[in-house]
Amino acid sequence: MAIQLVKFMLKFSNSVSFSSNSTIRTISSVQYVASRARDPTFEKYMDHYKKLVKVIAIQDLILANPNKNPPSVSVDFLSRLSQRLHLNRGAPSFLRRYPHVFEIFYDHTKSMPYCKLTDKVVEISRLEAGAINESLPLVVERLVRVLLMSVSRSVPLRAVFKVWRELGLPDDFEESVIARNPQLFLLCDGNEPNTHVLKLVGSYPSDNFTAAVEDWRVMECCKEDSKVDRTEMRYSFKQGFPPGMKLKKTFRTKVREWQKLPYVGPYEVVGEKRAKIGLKGLEKRAVAIVHEFMSLTVEKMVEVEKISHFRKWFGIDLNIRDLFLDHPGIFYLSNKGKMHTVFLREAYERGRLINPNPVYEARMKLLYLIMMERRGMLTTTQNSVNGEDDVQNKDNKLISATSVSDNTSTDQ
Image 1 (cartoon, rainbow, N blue to C red):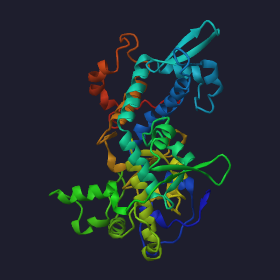
Image 2: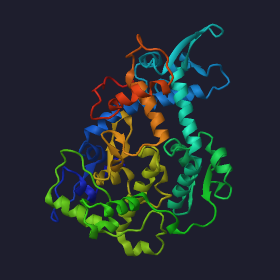
Image 3: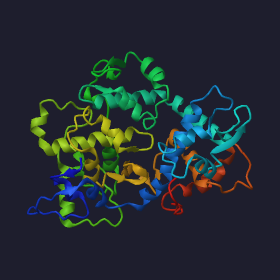
Image 4: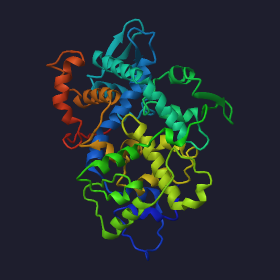
């Protein structure tokens, strides 16, 4: 909404000091986003990731034509979609900027230029698909966990479509995941025409699944050098604030109080507990739910617009974006690339996942090729992806946001 009349949670912004006597302020959503403490590590990472998003959109269009040999789309077709794909300088300019990713060729039968993926990218696409197929049991569990966090144990199918890539689902997940597991999932007609709702079949005790934050608490308790008070560990979340953020004494006190606050876990049923835990407890439960949701994603990041489709179904009555801004020690919100993207802060170090997975690694190979742009085109040949692994491992620091060069020219 355009105007937030009451900002109780501004206490978590570095631009506001905490005081019991502080007055209620009126602030616009744009101002609230702008007032956050920026983290250069994530911001530099997003400079490159926003290009990856555009490349993947074109890649999906190309791979959607498997009957063509090779799979391809006309440059004219992409030009007509330039505005929708946010290609500021047009499709031809964008394609030529990434010759390690796209190859333009002339189709004499159609008398027009076409675009296909390079052999490197085709192999990376196969690597990602193979990694997803090998992790299908984990993929099924992720979907079960998402449904368990829903108040009604169900979510709209269109919401799942929004985050299928983030959850590491195969592109045919309706068939390969949902239809093949009728003992777990059921597709029902929604309240609106041509809509479907995905439901969880059967009952699951709340102690069947453990939230990711619980695993962190156990590990933290076992550390001799743990910085978290073990007496406060039961309801705590890992905190790590942006560099340069001013942490005043009142701020630290508020964070400690919040860490001690009891809440109902993401897989527990609130029910009659709602009245007992109060508004602060419900807000902390909302943090726990989105924290767990992001822990289930392949890259521990997601666009705010996409996760907002689950807000009502998760029983969250708060503005999702403000929830991320209110807790800068847990989440980081970037607004680069005409979208709001949120990161799970604890999952990253120096711009890369601390615990990478095969699907993430495949996507980073593609990001590496994008970052190459036109470099190396005169001296390198089309080696296989595996053949270049040593080179990529050596240059993985390019993907690390702290050592990425500021190649932040006009968005393509």
